[in-house]
Amino acid sequence: GENVEQHPSTLSVQEGDSAVIKCTYSDSASNYFPWYKQELGKRPQLIIDIRSNVGEKKDQRIAVTLNKTAKHFSLHITETQPEDSAVYFCAGAGYSTLTFGKGTMLLVSP
Amino acid sequence: DARVTQTPRHKVTEMGQEVTMRCQPILGHNTVFWYRQTMMQGLELLAYFRNRAPLDDSGMPKDRFSAEMPDATLATLKIQPSEPRDSAVYFCASGEGPIYGYTFGSGTRLTVV
Image 1: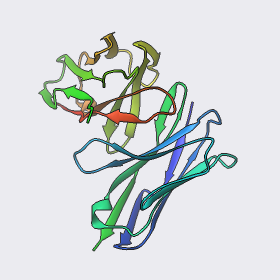
Image 2: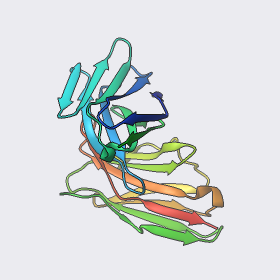
Image 3: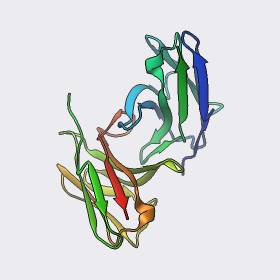
């Protein structure tokens, strides 16, 4: 089955800095890679996703890149704000699976 | 905004009791997942349904857990008998299938004492 590794497990940045979270996956059949943000005590919410036929996607301060050859994808957050503090999960999905990484706790200090 | 509805939101039960969690997926979504979230294990996939048929329940302890979709508007996850190690938040998520986004419910926080 699919195995998704996520790094780092925690990330502390100053407000205004950029944050990068990286994930690798094992199943070459995975073709959809969503990212979720989970605030304390709340449900995971989809913030951005990328499909295997696209190398990069951007939505305001958030961007995701995908390298299918190397089987890795990354989340980039620019101009971080305190409200970006949360746990971020990457995932790899195919026809019959949706596997999550272990999560990255992002702390943005004012 | 369309929502995935989970009930109950919180459940405290004694060891050995049966627990049933319910999920109403978003209308029109044909894919439903059940996940268990703990600090140590993160989001663990328990069961996966498409068009009400189970596709994958390999992550679910078969001796005590069962998952069903009696109809397209209801998915259930049952634990019998419950144990303290089952204490976790259980999430249901639904979507339109592979390569589409999945929406999570608010979860059921289960505490087994």
